Image (cartoon, rainbow, N blue to C red; front, side, top):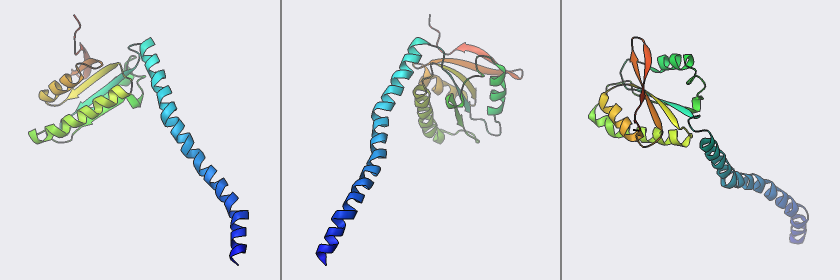
Length: 173
């Protein structure tokens, strides 16, 4: 009886197990290949693009910290009307939003979120950032300090119903 079972296992189940093992291994190997070599290739391609065409990968940062006010829609309307901003893909539009007043207790979480967003801006390959702010000036100072050594930042001010570009955050003299 045991010989029949072992003969059946060796004859039929062993080859089937090998085939199933190979089929399961293929996606694992493919994923490993993409993680190791695909990501490296993408980073190299991104670096070459940034190096050859500086200033051609803009991003937008919207900081909306005023309760009861949503500036995202007005920024989006403004963005679509501007030739330099309308082609920015959604993957390079970043937002920090709160729907209540900022208190001192919120600053730690807000600063962590700002650092996460700043990392996302750098990871997206952006080399120019258009910054729209609605909220306390102290938060604008923190954003400026966080972004001062990164990409070139252009500050926008809402005045008379439209946004005005006030120029770069850091002037290179």
